[in-house]
Image 1 (cartoon, helix red, strand yellow):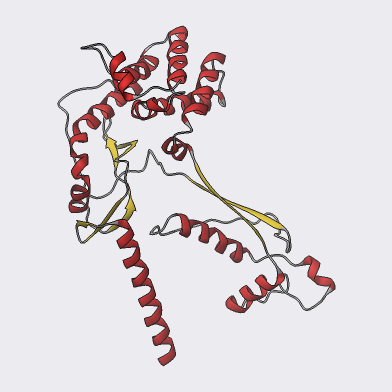
Image 2 (spheres, helix red, strand yellow):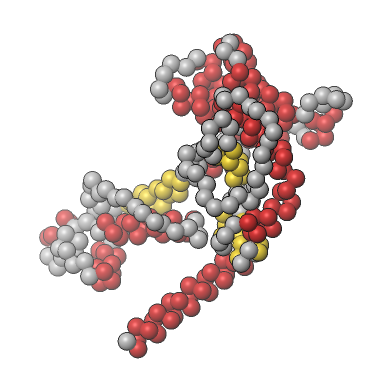
Length: 314
């Protein structure tokens, strides 16, 4: 049976702590205690709360999904208590139905395609790559042909471009250990890792806050620091579009703002908490992303037209 917000309010006694605070305390308790039975009780409760969609938002804010994932990943390197691992797996299985949690864990884009000889001939005509390993007029030799590696890369580029408009690929590394045969179905998959906890942010922060409070130099202390920062900046969320666009020194298209914090060490740590929306800015002002996408499309078409005109008059 799933709960509702009204039911949560009725079940919270006057002066009692709310569901979000309670779940944050549970996660903190896991990191603060060394008692295995206490940790088992915490993870069992968290996994149980993950069953109800009403709790998903609170579990995200408490970073319960990171706790579950940490236990599972630890089990691949060392021995982990069986109950803890079971609770973590059940918790992830429940909460992964939340789209934002699924996105946090991983995003994989898949595509299947079968390459024909006509496809390769068109690619050869466009690029000038007439290597006989890709195209031949010998009927018997056609069985030995295989698809150009650059052609395969083009398909990957198509997956990236169609799913992440506005992103720019700056470098790539390739290996082709096996040949890609003609007339056979090929499976492509692109895994997108959004988060990099070690990369340092660049530019000016949209909102910067210094807390006159010290937190322990532990995982629990870091979580307390991040949650305290989040509580302080949440009041800016309704005006976040104007704040972000006025602060960054460039235009942006469908980008997200993340909370970084420093605690004990002079390095920024990505908390993986975002404002929950994508920002589009032009000339220091917010724009509707659909309108900006159309302007980008028109600009690209104009550039293509101008380039074609220049080539024809050269």
